[in-house]
Image 1 (tube, one colour):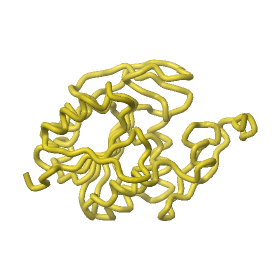
Image 2 (cartoon, one colour; image 1 turned 120 degrees about the horizontal axis):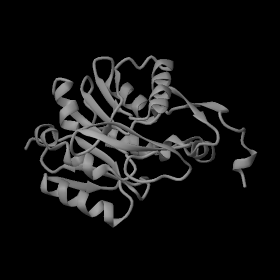
Image 3 (tube, helix red, strand yellow; image 1 turned 90 degrees about the vertical axis):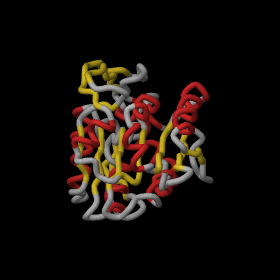
Length: 238
């Protein structure tokens, strides 16, 4: 009932993040609507992961979308740090870059590729709402499907020089398990804190099995959305 009262696309507004960065949001996209009516989007989850970011270190943002989390990671990592942000959809990657430029977030690098368990190409399903686009499921409001490059975390990390990674966010609309399957070398060496989304036992159980075998424990701190989880290495020095 409220959505038709909002300005039509592509009308947008500037949203101020908790620490002062600003990001451009479209009123009628899910992200914009949620921020308008709830005052933020997953602020608790992003703030929790930021606790594990080493100043001057590296953060991976897989499924960076238009930069809501990447900007917070950029600030926390600091000028000497580095954020590697993965976003396969060209228009969304352009919006991400615009938001980074707007905030002079020069320590964020965009990798315009999907991420999975093996390199190659994958069909990407673009929704009219970039928050819902996916290489794993057919989203609502499908606009088109097209092939995009597919990499793995381990390959991209190696290409980046194998920096020490302290934190790792994954939000890829159902493809989280495949991302983790392609990150075994990184997880073994660096033991980063992992924030991810999983909808239901069919997604969560295999993630629990993989990360449990890798020595991680699952947490869901107070204030997290029911679909979001934080995984921490039981012995970070292992």
